[in-house]
Image 1 (spheres, rainbow, N blue to C red):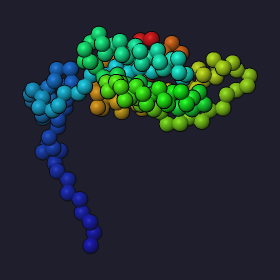
Image 2 (image 1 turned 135 degrees about the horizontal axis):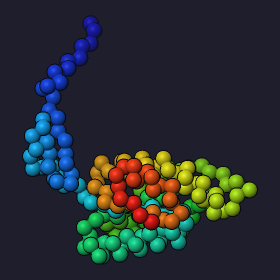
Image 3 (image 1 turned 180 degrees about the horizontal axis):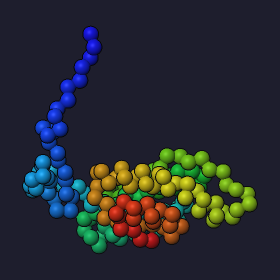
Image 4 (image 1 turned 135 degrees about the vertical axis):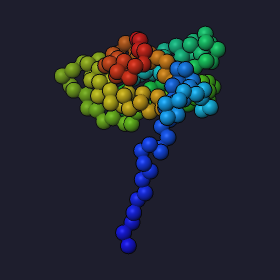
Length: 173
């Protein structure tokens, strides 16, 4: 016996669109006030690898939270690779336990072999540009759960500027 699939005619499938900025939904073209839970506003921070860059970005996140009375959640994007250190992991654990409005989003491990003909700084720029795909995927994924109001980049992470702007997210460093 052959399996069969039932398809509803296209005109009978309800089309629902959500306008996050105006907190409204459109059901088959009719605009109505949203009954869906409002998405949390978020600011994404993207530091360069290294504990000094991470601590500076987290402190900036804490300052934003204090100035705006926790209106935002702070999401810190983190590369994972050869520039990691044990200090980074313990710092992330401590911040996660003490500041609930700051969360960390780690990229998948990216194998990277530093070029002996390039400086450490040039190798770091290369590593960061190789993570552009992870930045884009993360911003797209995070946008489904949060309304990203801004992306703040470390000055070494400039390769991520066009990615955020391409998604219509304000970006600064």
